[in-house]
Amino acid sequence: MKITKPVGIVSYGAYLPAHIILATDIERAQGKEKSGAPQSLGVSQKTVPDIDEDTITLATAAAARAVERWDGSINEIGALFVGSESHPYAVKPTGTTVKEALGLSDSLALADLQFACKAGTQSLQIGLSYVLSGMAKVALAIGADTAQSRPGDILEFTAGAGSAAFLLGNENILVKVLATTSVATDTPDFWRRPGQNYPEHAGRFSGEPAYFAHVSRATQQLLQETKLKPKDIDWCVFHTPNAKFPQAVAQQLGFTPEQLAPSLVVKKIGNTYAAASLLALSAVLDHAQAGQKILVTSYGSGSGSDSFLLETTPLLVKKRAQWSSFIKDFIAQMQGVSYETYRHNTERSH
Image (cartoon, rainbow, N blue to C red; front, side, top):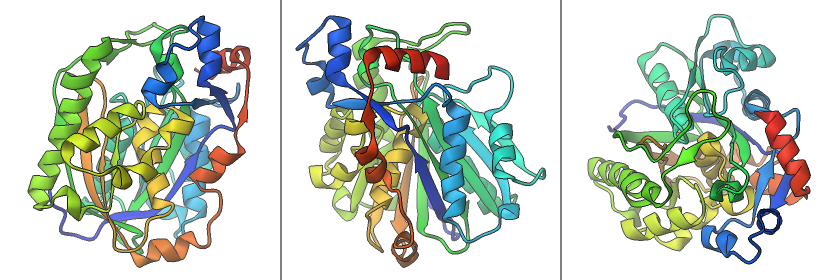
């Protein structure tokens, strides 16, 4: 759907834990040294939450950064949506705690969302709808996760933690949203039943009929609706369960490695699930110039994809010059932990 009214990102913020574990240390702990898994996945390390960092903590930290960078009043924020598949409570919203920590008004539309790894972009889409309809002057959309992985599972090489938050409005826009589209089917490639500590997945089935089919369909749908071709796009972002999948789908769709490269922070932080596409977008926005078009397509198991066409404005470049602590800075400051510390921290953070 093309968006004809002015609406877009008026601020954004990200947060990543200070610790990482190397993929080679996970290999060693699994007794699978030189398995080739890290090289195949393209992920050399992943983030590790501290023992007191859960989805609420991560979401609040990213949102606080977005608010700090913004010139508006928090009283203007009329909607808050938090997408995650690791909400700390089965019954109690993550968003209400985030709202209190930020000091937002009680007059607030609020909900937690869950659609695996695309819950973050679904929050973005719903927040945009609230602004476009006039139901909220400004909306806050968050994707945050402390991803779970069973010890010894292939997911252990990639399941990380992180968050990204976007303030959406129709004034002083940094990044215009020009169009968005979505697809969804019943394709159960990844799931976790109530009471289970770890998710299950259908292995290779999560590739072609799940990730690739949905990402390709949503992206092609968006390009058709906007009458654009890959060469008309400056940067592309595809959901990053690893580095291999987005590189493959970008090539299939006709995008170049150069268009994709800035988004591949997964190589250093792992798959942050509902935050992944939003963190990848944040990394692109951290260096994009004015007047550039960005295509973003997320993916959520179960299955579905959201796709967006964005365009940066001169205000992004102007405001960004006043900011500090970008994605690259988080990554540069990360410190390694042992496998034992990693397992202890991740068990405590869920």
